[in-house]
Image (tube, rainbow, N blue to C red; front, top):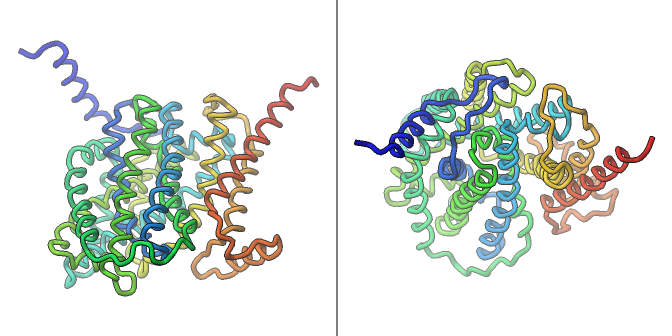
Length: 451
């Protein structure tokens, strides 16, 4: 006969597995994700075929410098993501609603619009990389069926996000870790050459790429962490889970390039040539669905910030169809380096502003109601951080050469060398953070002064 404790535990397990994310913003999010749930979910998010592809864009420093860049960039980027995750858990709100406390209702529409664009872009790239990996395994098959299958499954997962998160924790983690470890060991046992040859020139640029991959999750993280039972544990689980997994896969890319010297940067093809690489690659391609699902779901949830009564399932269906159609149109997904760096320029200073404002200035007191106070002034440090990023390392946008030319001209105007050697992400964070503190204290002093 089961004990009362066992009965309560079983009942709690059955209840949590049946509970789903709210359909609209009017409903409170169920607190059903514990430390292991969040850790498993974000470890899955951190393992992506797009992560080692980023290593193709690394400046060819020494192997030691690249490994250190992966470690430093992961720690910095994931600390920021974990902090925003803790805010979401504490406020029990998705990320774009949390930004109401930072900017006000109207101001929150700015990051909302940018995040919708970002998520659609990422969902498209994820569907594309799944189809590319599948076609590498089955080269005689056309790409379009894999695009449709990936888009369809990811959209279905987005309809039941909490159920998908539980499934990922129970099933996907072990298989994915084994495959990732296999590629890491295989690459690590190949001749890697002189570990210190190549120097450190470009070290900070590589850090920026690693940070950009992490901070791209800032606008999404609270969509899941709002279901966390404990804010501190949730923040730690998110940062640790994503950090360990993504760092390992960055190393797969770094070591894979050294070991296999893939032609034309085709790292996927190089991994396929590894013994039983086709099996491991197929498993990882299937796991990539969680990335596409996350972006489809978060696009829907972000849209609810502007349309709070809209059903997230309807929104997810629309987004899934659009992302799938775009995935059919992509022909050169490896050109997303500019997209990734632009994300870093946008979301690194945004993360700095909200973390410093929430923890140091507002002390966890945010008004997330339908009509919170407007705080347009907080857009200033975000914009300043974005400009600082561009002045250190101008980003580029495909088919828009005037964009990068403008920032190169701006560098000349203020006397910054194009080879300045600074980290754009760290500079951007520092500028946005300091200006947030200054404006916050000025605003507080003005509020306390007698009228």
